[in-house]
Image (cartoon, rainbow, N blue to C red; front, side, top):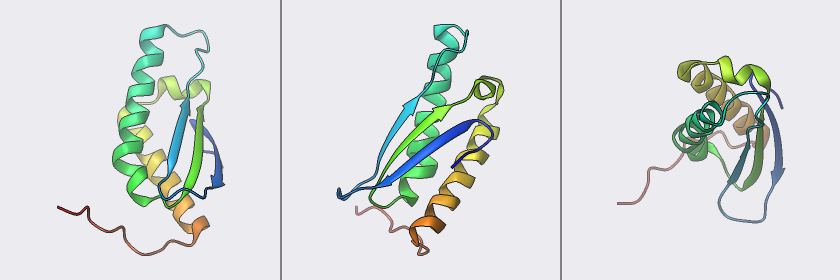
Length: 100
């Protein structure tokens, strides 16, 4: 799958929980820019994507234009990705709230 900023590879997993890896090449940017982009993506994955996923292994690889995206644009791409993955897995029910 692809978004404007990400190339995504997904594989069904035998594990109970989803695993997500993030690859952010430098593409000529500084370490500060790269780390900022990684932190943004990890937070969006944690908040927006993981609650939707079933047992799957994902690798998200950024493309050069990801460095130019603001947080809200990345958020909308991650949400669209979550919708695509949910449809692909056949998981249409809403996620269960965490146990207290």
